[in-house]
Every structure is written in C-alpha cells, then in structure tokens.
Length: 191
Image (cartoon, rainbow, N blue to C red; front, side, top):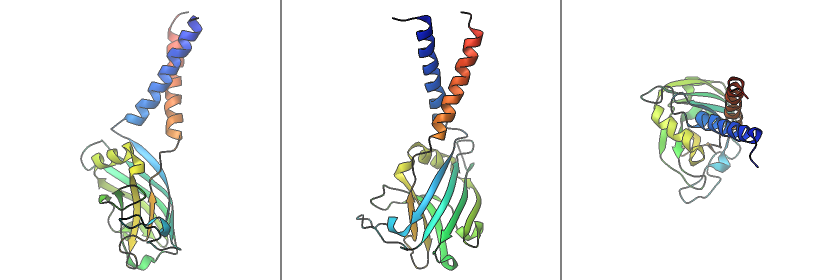
C-alpha cells in the first residue's frame, strides 16, 4: 500500500542516493584522502613475484589527491608519510603507477624528487601543477593504481601500496547532503 508517508520516504531515499552520487561523480573539485601503508613485500615483479622491495622498510600515512578545476595542470597531491627503515639518502622518485597488485605498470602521475618535500623521515607537503585529468581518472577507479617510492638500493621500488577504495566518509557526506536537501524539500511542500 502506498501512503503519502511511504512515497515521501522513497523520495527522500532517492534524494539521499542522488546526493551521494553527486559527491562521488563530481569531476571538478574532487578530492580524496587515501591511507597509505606501503612496504617492500608489496613490491612485485612483472610476473607477480612479491617481496621485491625493502622488506623492513615502510611508508605510512596519507596521500590526498585533488583534481583542482578538473582540467589542465590544476591538480595537487598532499603527502603526510612517515618512512621507516628506508634509505633516505638515495631517494630517487615517487609516483602513482597503473596496475593491479599482482604486477607492475607504467607511471601515470609523477611526483618528482621526494626530497623536495622531505624533512628527515617525513614526506610532508603539497605538490601542485599535476594533471587534473589523470587525477580524475585515478579517483574514478583507485584500486587499479598504486603508489611507490624508489631509492638507490631499490631502483624498481623500495615500498609500494595499492590505492584503497575511498573511505566511507564520502558516502556518509553524500548521504548527509541528500538528507539535508530532503528535509528542506519537506519543509517547503505543504501536507
């Protein structure tokens, strides 16, 4: 049986869903925080053999990708990573590659020399002028990409971590936006 309350609830659910989708699919101004837990065991060969990196090394913390305006070189990456047992005297690069956890892939987003934002064992700072289009692609399917850090002892990668799905906070935020819109709508519609 379809009562006015039921129809109103269904409409509210649709608005909540729409709010979540709008937040997730916004191509312009999208920003996502990824928890990074990189280690040498996650470094693999092209054939998928693990443990190719610095086995006692790690890089843990967060990486925030922002696609800026959604086009051009307006993207940015903000790092807050703590390095442990990684030779920091020979750091040579850090970037995001395309590829699943079982193989290697090409670099799609290069962050340059990690020493430009490194203080001791902390990589902390923001890199600007990145491809907004490439960041939008990464945000669209993050589990198909990985972050890794290279040094002299491990030129193919000292530590690596597959990007995880974005945290559920994005969905919660989207639902909250939709619920707010629904409540506003209910206040303006007479019973």
